[in-house]
Image 1: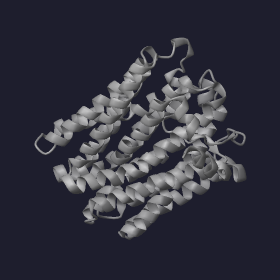
Image 2: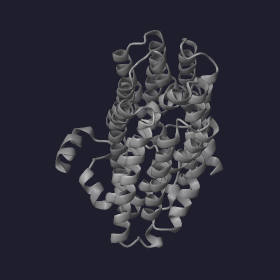
Image 3: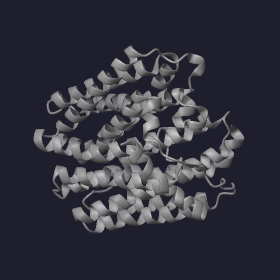
Amino acid sequence: MKRTLTKVAALLFGVAILLTGQGLQGTLIPTRASLENFSTVTIGLIGATYFLGFTIGCLRGGVLLRSVEHVRVFAAMTAAASVTPLVLGLWADPWLWAVLRFLTGFCFAVLYVVIESWLNGCTSNENRGGVFSIYVFITLTVMALGQMMMLLYDPRELELFVVTSILVSSALIPVVLSRSDAPEKPLVVHLNLRRLFEISPSGATSCFAAGLTNGSFWAISAIFALQLTGNIDSAAWYMTSGVVGGAIFQWPLGLLSDRLDRRRVLAVTALGAGLVGTAIAIAGTSMPEYALMLLGALWGGMAFPLYSIAVALTNDRANHDEYVQVSSGLLLLYGVGAVAGPLLAALTMGAMGPGGLYVFSGTVHLVLFGYVGIRALQRLPIPTEQRSDFGDALKSTQTASAVYETNDVNEELSDFT
């Protein structure tokens, strides 16, 4: 483990810098959009374009890697991703912002492809789970740190956009100067969504539901907090509380799912997220800020681990040679949900006020609880000796490392439909 971490230390350092900038940008964009009097629906659409770009980036990232390999792709995508926040800060136009957020989503999806395939190439089956758990921990903590950097400057001004650009650009330095060899060209796989639902309907459905709710959180929860408190600092703290809650609950719930039927853990976690979301929707306008922050952390603790548990559940039922294919399909389902989620949540907020965000997420989680709970009662759990370890499956929590053979994507999707 120590030798492997030495090999990837420069990469992880670069990831920490990169995702600090991403965390700042994720809170800054909806906050500034709200201050510019963009409508809630418009802000939701801008958030959806990010995830649309992310989904397409996952599909096309493999083509870039096969063409010019890891370091050059990382350099190109980092350069492009560092330009977009500067342009965002100069011109507050909704159409321009939608295009730039699409580009940002594309760049970060390809960067995830590079990062995670690089980590896969440097690890073995014995230490991959541990390395990726460190990677996920870094991801969540530095994104929370980035969100708190919102407190440094006035989001109405250009400074925070410049800080974001500096952070994203600086991530390139340790990666380019790393002595570690880049991995070989990644494996090519074909998408087969029909097979994914055959393996685990509960796992596949949960990934899509997680995309709906998590995507809406990243896109417009800062707007929810800003409208509720009227305080930019409180909006930053609220976003951070959700991410920190997700980091804290990630491993306990995952380890619990190693000991019990994962579908039951998934159902109970979805129920918890649904109930907390409902409580926020009902009492959000009347509760003190500290209570709102605590409920936000609890919501994140229930909502964010859903995807990890769903990945582990699906891998339990997949053949060993289907692992990459399964990870690819789950990521695509998550991405599609994350495209639709911000728009649907924004429409609900437009009709019901700020609490509409959690009316939407609470509804999705409660429906997921009913679906997974019914399936858990219909089928026997998988014997413990056949299960995938949660730590090994955790690397798919935000994975984009499976590379697609894009010429066959449309054919596979048409087969599914």
